[in-house]
Length: 121
Image (cartoon, rainbow, N blue to C red; front, side):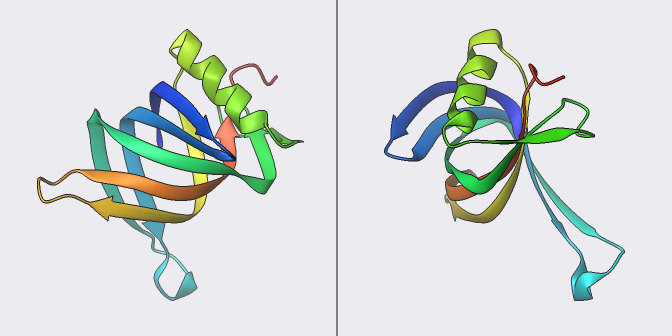
């Protein structure tokens, strides 16, 4: 999932926000290539609720480097990205999706294991 964020709120260890961008899932049938890709356009925005996985990695914007971060780092990254209008890219574990009758969906829960941090060099 990647995009820009607005309306960030926190309840316990769960972070809720609105994402404008795209959401995709990759699958490797039978555990090997070729991959299957499902992509959803989220240009109208999608509501998301996530938590920080353990361990959690802050990644460079090119996704080639990263560093382990402590609890609370994901929220700091998301708030900074929202404040500066930066695109954030996520890798999530165990996402739970809810689909609406109008073709919309909501990410009701996921553990974020990696996210881009524009300040990471």
